[in-house]
Image (cartoon, rainbow over all chains, first blue to last red; front, side, top):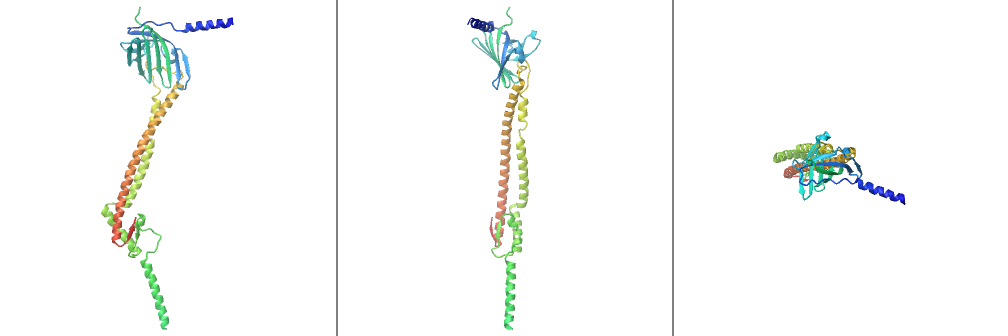
Length: 140
Length: 188
């Protein structure tokens, strides 16, 4: 019984520790940096797989520029990848970004006051789901 | 003696009658007449001889051809050519849109840029579905193209067939009028 209680405590503690640290407020920001830690891919046949973003060639850090309407990789990543944002809508604290590139479609919903982003990317025959924590890029 | 002479005379008369009968009533020779080849039934109502009927049919054929500007034998050759062309067109229609499936499948595997370079963790699994979907779309497009092309071919073939049939009917009417004028009963 005592062992069971200890196990429960360990499980609960692990669960709470796994919750991502709250992101920053990005309200009114133009350049935002987002970090993605885990991604899940679900296939048309019903199966899903989960892993770090590198598994899908997704950069860990992505810059969002709301003026230029672009998603770009950071300088430090050594990559120079850019994708235009084709649709941008701000409704209250919700910022919706959408676009399509090379047969892939993405949809990002960023909560400005928390800096928490929900990301969905549709590939052919599968869908990627991920979450990112965002922070203003030029904040000191 | 008189009796013998009467018998000889009777025999001669009967033989002569048979000979006359054979010359006036058309004997079946096993060969079809010109009219019969066109499914036109001609009866010699005035007892015309077979040779006479053949001559009359030939004359009426020429007259009807000149009158209508249609020669059924030419028409039949042309109809056969048109039928072969229609068959070829049908085969081409069946092949129509054959590349659509492959094109759709190829279009399913491109990449590029930030989002564009994202790849599936199991490309085979996703691509198989993508290629399958591309092929399904391709098959649908191909079926539509085939149906449209086949419909067009059938419509054209039907129009040609109808036009040919009308020309043949016109010729037969003219041919029949001519033969009826020469004392034949004609049906087709």
